[in-house]
Structure formats: structure tokens, C-alpha cells
Amino acid sequence: MTDSTATPETTKGRILDAAEELFAARGFGATSTRLVTTTADVNLAAVNYHFGSKDGLLRAVFERRLVPLNRVRLERLTALEQSHDEVPLASLLAAFFEPALRLGESASGQRFLRLLGRLHSEPDRSPVRELFFEQFQEVSARFMPLLARALPDVPRQRLIWRVHFMIGAMAHTMMCSDVIEFLSEGACRSNDVEAALRELVSFVEAGLRGTEEEA
Amino acid sequence: MTDSTATPETTKGRILDAAEELFAARGFGATSTRLVTTTADVNLAAVNYHFGSKDGLLRAVFERRLVPLNRVRLERLTALEQSHDEVPLASLLAAFFEPALRLGESASGQRFLRLLGRLHSEPDRSPVRELFFEQFQEVSARFMPLLARALPDVPRQRLIWRVHFMIGAMAHTMMCSDVIEFLSEGACRSNDVEAALRELVSFVEAGLRGTEEEA
DNA sequence: ATGGGATTCAAACAAACGTTTGAATCAAGC
DNA sequence: GCTTGATTCAAACGTTTGTTTGAATCCCAT
Image (cartoon, rainbow over all chains, first blue to last red; front, side):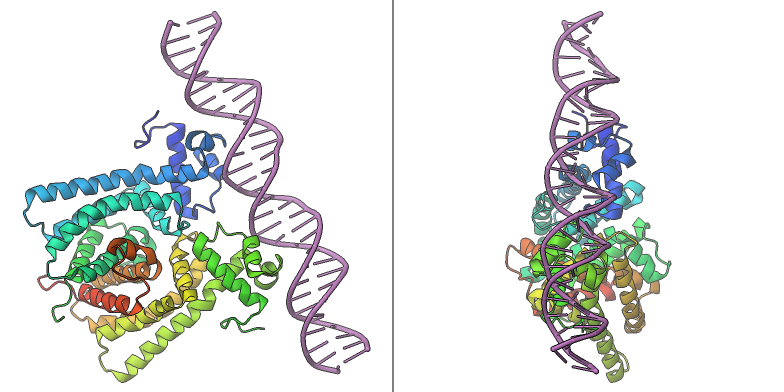
């Protein structure tokens, strides 16, 4: 059994790399097994041999990145809990955003982020969506209580809406590299992770706290 | 030439309805022409006869809803410009959000919103994405100057980032009907358009204005 | 009624799809 | 050096795909 988190120059790894790139660029349904194996320079049957099916390959592509990503998030939350009695909101947000946005620093990570955005295009009961929800539940179960404690004045139901908007802002930033450049006519660079992180934390923190003049 | 914005009980209209529903539920690539025509109860060749190709059908599905949606947005912006010297930020946001979120009130509009979210799953140079950008450019060209005037203290580059996050929050709200219910364990209803609009405007307004204590 | 353009129909098309097969090749262990 | 299990390979499997075709049918102006 080879290590599937690292990507040595094995058949399995080359398939994962090629699939990640092609799924991100063209979508899952529009990418054929043949194109994947041709790009990876391996035999056509290798996908079914190593991953069982095309669906199995998609799941493996996600699993390779998603599991380590959420592990880092959980580790950062643990570290914050141990070093603070009351975790500052900005630190909490950074723990959630930064590991994801940092993926955009490498070309391969950037590919994965675009692919992640396409997750929502999967049929509702797809095994990939289930993998995602399963992973996300673990993070949100740890994250939400800390967030609620950092924002004691925000009613629960309102907080949930705002977390929902927060996820939308983050997801959009993660995947849409071209929209920010379109909007700014080139003034904002999508691969400027520092700027994106700083601005995202600032925007979401203000949004979560809410306007001053509310009931 | 039949009216393509209304949906009379014609072959063309039945195909559009079926395609909208199926593309939204299963994705474009995973939906076959045969399934569309069977669901619409029309002959297989009707798709190619009326829309030229499967891609043409996809474009028509988007065009039918997207063009009227953005026309309503532009009309509301015009009305605001005529009734105010300085358009209030909240009114501006509502003019942008409300026409889109209101689509979620009807079952068919809700289907379309999910489909719209799947737009980003299209290949980067797909004709559907071009239709979307083309439509969006017209709205953002009118919207951005008004927004900049309502937020004179926010530097241009920062404003662009924040608009980007705003779009993400809105898009996520429009398409992800299930995530909010997952987060709230049923306490928040995704089809509660009034609540979604109120909370979204509140969140985004606070986020756009930014925190009090910034440089 | 009838001619004619628009539409619908059953049938077939070639191409591409995901997957399977069984033999060939490789890499170690004894 | 032979055996054994894992991997790779070319070839083919049966389906399904989007699209085309030409005849049949509908609809309406004349």
C-alpha cells in the first residue's frame, strides 16, 4: 500500500495529479478516463485498477487534500484553545481561513481550490459531497462553540446566518481567481494570499459583529 | 419566433423546464439529451431542432432567467438614482440582492438558483460563462460607482475585495439551500427569503463599512 | 380544400464513454 | 532460478452519448 498523501512519482500519484488538474479545469463529468490516463502517461486500465472506478478516483483526489487541510484547522483551534481563555475573533477566523487560502500559494493547491469550488456541482447525493460534509462537520462542531463564545451578543439564529455568509465569502475567494481580477481590472491579484486573508478577516469580522445601530 | 421568456405549454418551453430541473439536480455533463426529452415528453430530436445543440440548450436555459433578472436589477438602480441624491447603502444592496433571492420563492426559481451556482463548474471558456460575464458586466458597471459613492471612506482596492466577498456571500446564499439547514440543524429555513435578505443586507453592510478601529 | 413551411417522429449514425479481460511484465523472497 | 503476487499492457466489451436524417404530420394562409 503506497502513501497516498505524498505524491511520489508512482502511477497512482501521477493519476491523482492529472485528474486534479483536469477535473479542476474542465469539470468531472466532462473529463474522460482516457484523457486522465493519457495526460498522466499511464495505461487506461490503471484508473480502475488503483481506484476501482472513476468515482473512486474523484473521491481519492478530494481525500488527498481535504483530510490534511481540516487536520491543520483542528490543530490550530486546539492551539488557540490552550493559549487563550477567550479566543479573539480574528484569531479564530484566521485559523479557519488561512489553511485553506494558503493552498492558493502553490500552483497545485490553486488547482485544488478551483476543484473544491466545483464540489457543489456534484449531484446532491454524490459520494464526494458526503465526504465533504463528513469532513466539514468535524471542523464546524469545534469551530461554532468558540465562535459563539467570541460573539456573545449575537443571537444564535442570526449567528448561523452570518456564518453561512462567511462560508460563502471564503468559498468564493478560494475558487474564483478570475472574478477579483475582473472586478478590479487587474488592480487586485488573486494569488496575493496575504491581502486576501487580511481583507477577508476584516470583512467577515465586521460582518459577524454587525452594525452598531441595531436592535 | 415564439416568446422565450414566458413558458407556454410549447415543446420549447417544456424542454427548457425539464432541462432546468435536471441540470440543476444532476449537473449539465451528467444529464443526457435523452433524459431531458423523455422528462419533457418530447421527441429526442427536438433539442437539436429548437436549440441547435445541447450547449445551445444550456445557454437558452440561462438566458431565459438571467436576462430578466438583471433587467430588474438595472430598473431598481435607475429608480434609486432618480429618487435619491445619495443612495443609501442598504437600498443599494437590496436592489442587488432582492431580485435574485426572490427567485427562491418559487420552486422553479429555486431550481434555477441552484443551477446558477453550478455555473462555475463550467469549463473556463464555456459559452455559458461568457453569457454570465457579459450580463454581469452591465450590472456591475452601474452598481460599482454608486457603491463607491456610498462608501467614500473605503479605499478603492479594499472596496473591490469587499465587493468580491459580498458576491460570494450572496452566491452561496442563492445556491446552497441545504447548508444553512445543516448548520442550524433546522432552525433556519433556506426558503425564508425575508430573513435571508434582512440578514444578508445587515451582514454585508457591516462588512463593507468595515471595523471601527482600522487605519 | 390545398399547398407549403414549420414541426414532430422513429430510426439510425459514428464516436466516445467507463469498465473488463487475460496475457505480459516486473520485483522480490526463498 | 524459479515461484508468487502485484502491476502494466493492448485490445475489446457493451452502453450511452450527441447528433443527423428523411419521411410523416401538423397548422394555417390562401
